[in-house]
Structure formats: structure tokens, C-alpha cells
Length: 355
Image (tube, rainbow, N blue to C red; front, side, top):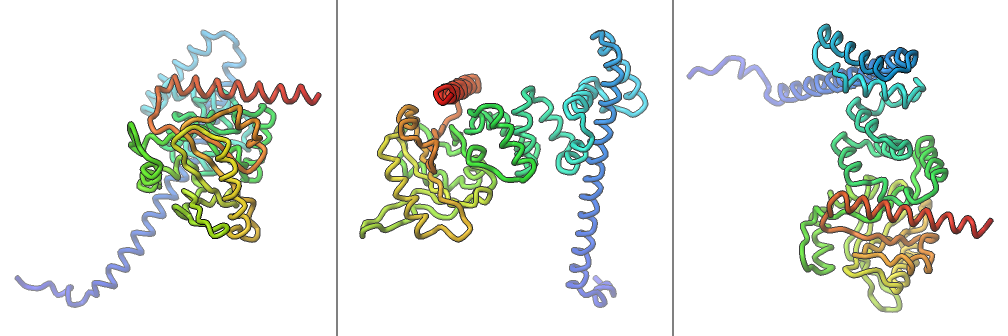
């Protein structure tokens, strides 16, 4: 076989470098095109929805609205192909109705895809919709992640959901305007750890080892701003060694987070143990510009009255349950809604006591 003359002329390394550079240009161009297509799609869907809403608003009969949507869908589909179903036009109308301010829409199209927006529009409650919208923007969730977090009832599992609506809105406004988070937004209860694959009996070491094997998924459940620091962090106090199960850093809160894993239900003694850890971390590990360390006690069951009497909600220690097996969604929803109802009732009683 004769050798191609070009082989002796071409420098393989130079060609490889050239190919890489051109590939990067093509990929960057594709991303820019996709971005502009998405941005334009969000805008045109909002304007479509606005026109539909304004037209239907002029005639308050429900039958008229249904007829308009159906006929429009037929005409648009015959002229522009699939993609203009009644369901799609309904989303467009909801988009323009819920987000009537064009400036807000302009900001949304820069950060979210139409699929993101459609998922968020499916949330009926305004406060929950705003929660997922702002966290989705801040943490740059993919549509799959957004769907998963709604499915796992993330909002209901935050401490924020148990606050009065005015305070929830205030914290979300701060997140929106300043991009800063509070511990009530960060910490969850319960934590869903079904991905660990733990069944029947297991030890604290088994739990810890499983978390480290699935560290990426564990951090996903904790939240995107968590960064892993250490396992079994040894600290020495009065010549006695203590070990902190897991140590993380939270970029948004700008502090160290110590996690203590417990197989049993919460006990008051766990508070003193965690306080000792936090005092040591504050003295020896906290860097200039960082906030006070926070402790998270993960246990199989909370003891609400003990937690309230110890006033843990006012300090730097959080107590959360964890679930190694995800219950039926109906049971989880019932449990979370009951917890929210009780928490808001306690807040109301506290307010009444001070007025």
C-alpha cells in the first residue's frame, strides 16, 4: 500500500490542535444558537399568552374561551405544524397571566428554558411557585432536577415553609434581589436518603460509609452550595479525642456545617455534644469573614417537645429526620402538611402571647 503524500506533509499534532479549536468554535456557536432560540421561544410564548388573555378577558363566557383556544390551536397547527396544542396555548395564557410584568419575563428568559417555566407554571400555590423559581435560578437546576425537587416536596421540607407567609415572601425577596440564602432555606426536614440502599438493620458506620459512597447524591439532597471537607474529623479537647461524623462548608451561608449521624431518635444530650463541636470549630477552624459554624443532627426521629424546650430553632443547631426508604407520596405529603400546620400554629400562639 502506497503512503499518501499528504501524510508526510501534515503535522498530526498541529491538525489535532486545529481540529480542537474549530470544534470549540462550533460547540460555542451551537450553545449561542440554542440560547437565542430558547430566549425567543419564551418571549413569543408570553406574547401569545398575552394576546389570548386580553381577547378572552373581553368575553367572560367560559365557552367562548374554550372555543377560542380550540380554534386557534387548529389554525396555528395547520400553518406552523405541531407544537400549538390547546395545552401549549393554555400554558402560554397562564404564563402571561401569572407574570404580567414584561420586565420579569425578560429576566426569566435569560436564565430559564421554556420547559423550566412550564414546570413552574404547573404549581398552583403562588408562594411555592416563587420558591422553586428563585431556587431554580440561583442553583441553576436542570429541568430534570427541578422536576425531582418538586416531586420530593422540597418546599414542604424546608424550615421556611413552616413560617408565616409574610416572612416566607420576605426571605424569597431577599434571595431574588441579593442572591443570599438563610439557614431556613438551606436546611431540610426530613432528608430523603433512599438512594443509599440501606435496608433493615445498619450501624452508624454503615450509614456514614453509604453516604460517602454516594457523596454526590448526598450533596444534591443537601443542596448545591455544600462542599465536602472531612469524614470523622478528629478534635482533641482536654487530651480526649472526639470525632465529628461529617464536615461540610456552605458557600451561601459562608460557614462550616458539622453533621452528626444518629440511628435512634433525638435525645437532649445530643445538643451538648454538638455545642462542644461547634465551640471547637469556632475557635480553631473558623476563618476570618466566615459566619458561626452550624450543626445538623440527623436522627431517625425528632422529639419535637424536647427540641422546642431546648430552643434549638433559635441557635446554631438544627435537628432533622432522615428517611432511608421513601414512603408513599401521600403519606409523606400528609406528614409534611401536618408538620407545617403544627409549626404555624405554634408561631401563631407565640405571637398571641406577646400581643
